[in-house]
Image (cartoon, rainbow, N blue to C red; front, side, top):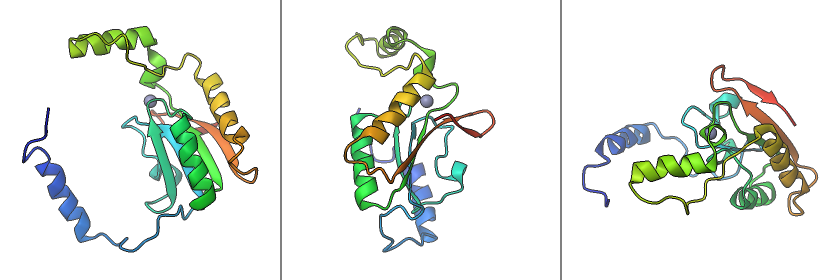
Length: 168
Ligand SMILES: [Zn+2]
């Protein structure tokens, strides 16, 4: 499954057009709006624009389900100490695939797609989305290396209305 010359031509052409009006040369890497967002990899989520931000404003960490994983905490420790972040939003969403299936069901679907055994693959499914969100928010608030001055909120993003609702 190696890449072949030409496989990415459409995206590279779009990138050249993007670079023609690119104006962030020399811009630093801090979060200018002081915001970090942990959210799902779901393609329906536009994490910056949904809260009125632009590139340069925020740190974004994404994974399946928008979970506060050890890697998310690593990112938030760096972001709060070195990158100007003082507000953190944890944002799972409605109709998330990670809440719609059991781990067993996902392993079956992936196994069928791959034509291989997938029973060993970990999928971090969420049985109770609000309970998981509350736990995730608490993980950030309780982290010894994330300062108490950082404000942490847990929100649910509705992929059908575009609205965020604060839960925690
Ligand atoms: Zn999702």
